[in-house]
Length: 289
DNA sequence: ACCCAGGACTGAT
DNA sequence: ATCAGTCATGGG
Image (cartoon, rainbow, N blue to C red; front, side):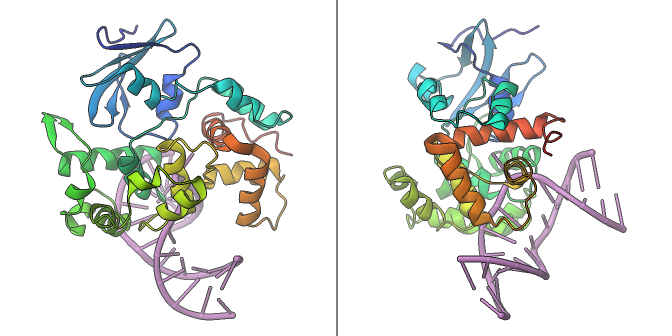
């Protein structure tokens, strides 16, 4: 049985799937407890989130209704988003049916940037472990066991060797340089928020350890740019095996062009349905041929 | 032992 | 512009 947090924010959230949203590789600071509630962070606010009776309950200090709604993407007009999807796409239809309540989060850009710099060739559970280790090692402590994610200025004062102690491997150098770029103001995450998506993407890719895929993840999961379409190994697998039916000689540029044209102005949202589906439904790829 | 993981960087064509 | 090699670490 579940006991949602009793005090705090309560929002109508009909159809919202908290489990799918928080376990689908967007956010890495949340852990689900035995009571089925999630403990994690919205920005610098530690909180507990649970679902009950079509409502989302979030307990934590310093939170507002608008802030929580914005974080979980509950303030978006989903009708218009879904209406922009390709109408006759059986794979996207199946993906949406698998987890209809999956939503795209709007997270804090710096932490999201770090998470995805650390994401390359790592599994989702390992990225969450790195996020936790970075918090404990370098983040300001609110209470015992509660560490804010370290700001750029703080990570910039840490040595590369100290970063390596968080199991970052070859990503330690990337994060080490990236923190200094941001802390020095060489690249402004606030300014990026004001740029059109193509320019914002170019600017993000100036950060060390950020290529096209990571830039698209930050655009989608932090800046709310729903047209950003990250193509990782899973999504590439979906595109090649389902949409191109194993046709050989499809170059990455062609995949990117197809996904932009086919999935449309909110393609990133469709991408997240496909990603979550392909990773969690064992039968997902069986009907490919 | 082997293969894979929400890839990016480097240096060669 | 595009391609192969390389980069640490943990899980299955």
